[in-house]
Image 1 (tube, helix red, strand yellow):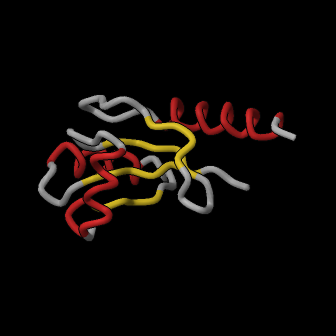
Image 2: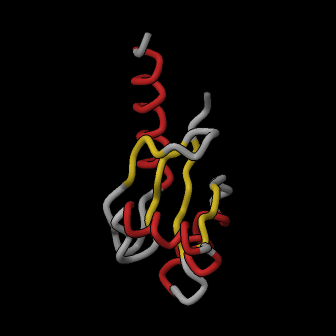
Length: 97
């Protein structure tokens, strides 16, 4: 099982646009969850995940299960911090029998 970064963003969010542009320039790979395109169930998930501001970064597996959600940070998390958390969570998964 591999873990990946998923960015929750909105089309109307200028912080999100700047953050994704920065990640793209660095060649950082990520998945997108577009809050504007979410159906009713998806909008309920935003409430479940307690998303009030964006961008929000989650560490998810291949099935979309969340293994970690970073707290909101205005400028987003650094790729180094995200990769570190992915490594930590992958180590934790290997410990589970």
